[in-house]
Figure 1 (cartoon, rainbow, N blue to C red):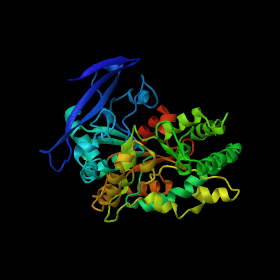
Figure 2 (figure 1 turned 90 degrees about the vertical axis):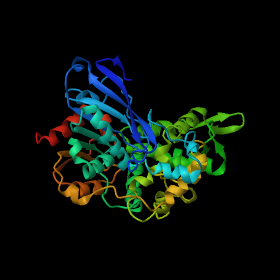
Figure 3 (figure 1 turned 60 degrees about the vertical axis):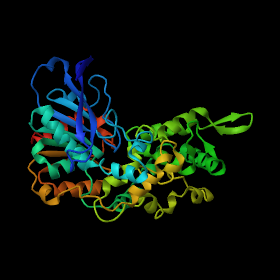
Figure 4 (figure 1 turned 180 degrees about the horizontal axis):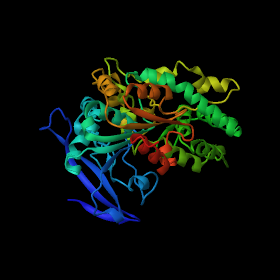
Length: 433
């Protein structure tokens, strides 16, 4: 049963699909997928080609737009859009601390979660495409991790695609997670330096907060253990277009005077816990490093191990001197599964995933070298989340892929730039730019 309803300028339809948990066993257990169909109100009864949107993450449901927000308005000029909640996210069969115990213990949970990578997501798309379009190919728009999925799509089922558009999501074809983070930490350091150049008053503020957290056992109202490392991880904001400003506004109201002395303010703690908690997207933490797993090597908490190669990120060592505290970025660490109440019950499951060595290959270099699908990718000049050099190397390895390299936007450029970004990339797939 489908349900349709209206928002300003658009008609929305809720759609649900049943797919195999394991596509290698199509007669076995199934899960449910949810997607929201969107069409311009004045074209609701017209035939249009389809565009399927794959959200970044992993672990996030598709955007919940109101009307024709961000890039959606441009897409609706010529497409019906399917906003897919990838498996385990949004309204699709959830995978979190509440539901995963239904699978059994940590070993069973880890086995289950091996089916939540790009390979399974693309096979989901191919199953529902036949139902949605009647078998006609569609255009895919992949943001960030959605771009990783798109590259897998091009490797395994290019016949399902009319064109592919990627924004901030061209991964290396063969880099291990260690290579990804070894490239990431110097990039993060540059972003932190740029933040402090913009807001020099934040140098002392960040040091003061970290010093307080090293000296005190702080638990946020939601039960999150707020450590100096957790505070540093708020640097993930610096990868977005407005992130530096958001971080600055967070830091400026960190402390308040109380009868017992100076304390972290309620307002600061409330905002910090909302930024730090993985309650709404636990898959991000659970399978984040697994999205790079392709060989016989475990990911083995790659970001944590590689961070040790960069001692300048050690808060205690920094505060022993007079240098600026370095924030960190998009990385998952084992201590998060101790600090975050939404992740604590899943610590052993995460350990098993980190130790796993049987990940299947995600990209087919030979097939990508012979690609015939029009592809365009926005590559952000100093993207904090996805290494630019890795992206450009991959762009050269995919036949016919056209890039738009820009420093006008950060990683969330498709949101900030909206219609203009999508318009530019669609034009590149059609040799119009």
